Image 1 (spheres, one colour):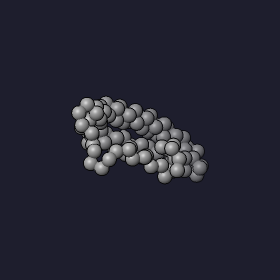
Image 2 (cartoon, rainbow, N blue to C red):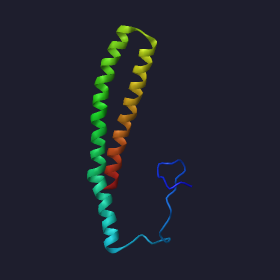
Image 3 (spheres, rainbow, N blue to C red):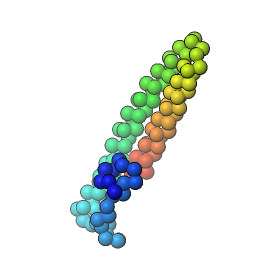
Image 4 (cartoon, rainbow, N blue to C red):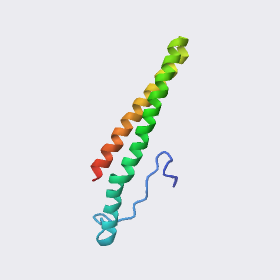
Length: 104
């Protein structure tokens, strides 16, 4: 098993005891980290995604016009792939905003 968290099948090692969720300063620090992620980090990342989707929308619209003028099937497949990417990024943006709201 690999220690790389990006490797397929990675599972972090368990270091706590059952029922031991922390207390005192450590628990407060963990709760603050979750709150900060939900209020700041995740919405900021979602904002970056939103900006990227907006740019991609403009680019794919321009490319769609060019593809229409060319009439070549490959150009239309590229436009379809760009629209799929745009849709996936739009859904990811919404899910990131929702995850941030759910944390706080």
